[in-house]
Length: 250
Ligand code: FES
Image (cartoon, helix red, strand yellow):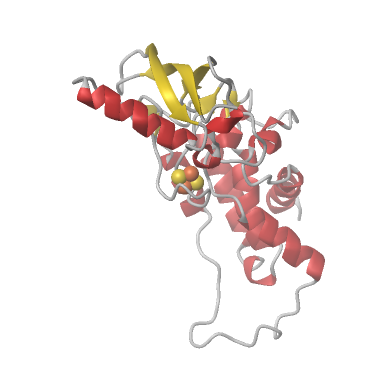
């Protein structure tokens, strides 16, 4: 098998506040060892050399940690490979001669800033609406002073793996942010430290999520399938239960 491939890219190009459209680019001799973002770097170098505007895309760590990268590749958020961020996707998963379509996250809560870059301030606002947890200041107490059962500790860690990339929203037909919000709520509610302000937190975060224009969950499970950290939809059930209890239970 050759170490290089030739591909055709159909990339969404859009300036903020303007209508967008797909532009076609030929990328030749791309190493199969390159990551998807390195492939975009190579295409951009050629565009810059030709005096054309490079494709805008988000990235930071390029290690699957920060949650900055993301685009819909051939109809899949972060591409078809499960449990993988766009920066960790490699060109060896594509074929020579393939046409690859690349689009930004599409959701009312994520307006396009430019090309593949969307504004995810709405996610920051959901987190901010959650507020703080009450902990005593001063030196950290002994780790064993607050017993936490193993099952809850594991579930909290799994929920905390969410990197806030927004793939769940992009994959959902309702552009729902419930997987994201529920992961952030669960990681605190599953631990004793997060239970003091639990009611206030869940109400404020859910209401901020609705205000940002995200849709509701209709059990499509697309979010879980697209999530690069494989966050479970069981977090959504937990969030709904906590919300109902906080809002309606006497
Ligand atoms: S660039 Fe950080 S997760 Fe992809």
